[in-house]
Length: 613
Image (cartoon, rainbow, N blue to C red; front, side, top):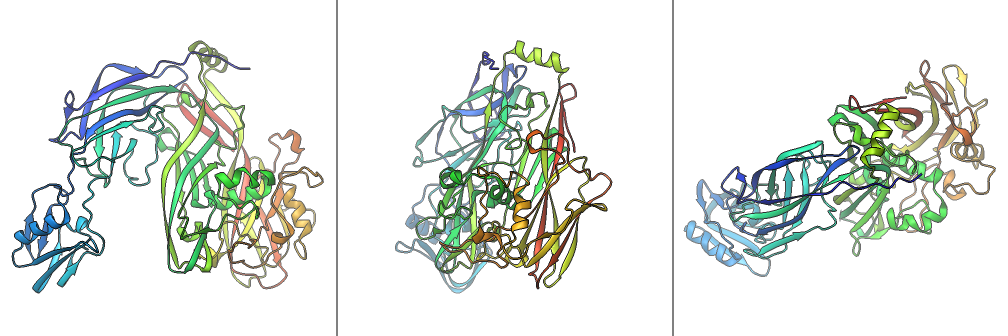
């Protein structure tokens, strides 16, 4: 059934800092009071974005944030201005007559000289490239002198906006990051007709708000002249079934010889947490998200999709289906990824399900913890890099939206009493540390749920978790495993122990049964004989194949074709995995990923979102 509806009209708010109440001398924080409120229609939320912004580039290279310098207890304050490096050196020489200040045009560095030892500190050290408290007879810039001025403008609102800002995580309400690409005293014109920046706000109605501008360091923009902006407020309804997380990663490698770096997009996501009710209610929590994503991809992904789509969206190598492309660092330092999320706002909601988020009092909040660089990245090459860092930029969470006419929405609310319930599933993670040489283990999985659907158990070498030269996310080991058997309380789920020796074929059949039919020729998955039964780590190269072994246990009691709430109940008894090794195992982290049936309920009358599993 398709519903055609009239989209509520957008609202445009024109703002001039001349006509608003400013909180200070600069035009960087204004209070806006609307002549009439903007109210979300039934079935919709409000999205705020900056349609246009016009502002003069008035923040000078040397300004009140950077114009103070102290040398051996004597402080001088320079008049703000757009100095060249040579003019700045001359000005500092006149302020500190007993010191010599020179700028080297070849190295772009400033050098201070004195007949006696000196100590330099102050806000100007930032643009001079000198460390606070540097001392000596001769002190030079460690980095190039930076007189480029402010290169970007952050636009914030006092309203709660569901947007991510990795650069300034302490601030919320980010509407736009505007690149300042005009020279000093030039006029910047920003235009975003598609409203790609901005986000859903938490309020159902807007009577007024603050608009503030910050420089690239998060400080109030030193805007001495007025600015004007057009703020667009649209009304949207959300379909989270096709949620895609987009972002760009820029990697910095240190050391090594001709090093390479490799990572899938999901490798950078350490954990995922979803909250409702302004963060007071937790809906989902998945630790070791990157390892879970890798495991489910191995179990469920079509090989044709890996050779085509995943080479574009995840950075996959089309010839080695489980491995990412080994990027040569000298030519490639950044990659852009588009990742479907394993979440109720992502792949766990099918395309025929539209979540009634309009019935909540505030937007959902998605918290993502980023992984350590040595965990997310695998370095190879002639000699692997010794250390690495990475920066994440351009983060967007793309969702599909549907719109309903008010009468259609009222009809649905009347039929449901404004209460919405649906079923889906949840993944959770439980970790056990297994010591090297320990020949058996009874792994307790303390998840108490009504219906446990699936269990995946991954062994990853503990020593490789923060080793840049290892593939710690995609590399799962058999680790000389002899057999395993899983029980719920005293009842065995596997009638007999499952063998993992030799080619580990019985273990493979059990793992495939979790998501598909091992007898079908049309099944999906990326497991193969060259990766399935590896017992030790393989160094990442352009031809390496990492271990893919995983313990999989199907816990559904009925047919895969007609799944009900039919898994094993662990309400009274925990799952226990009994494992035994054929020979000395490595020390590993054993991650147990459990999938359970869950009931989700949104009460539009109380605006509450609850989950029962």
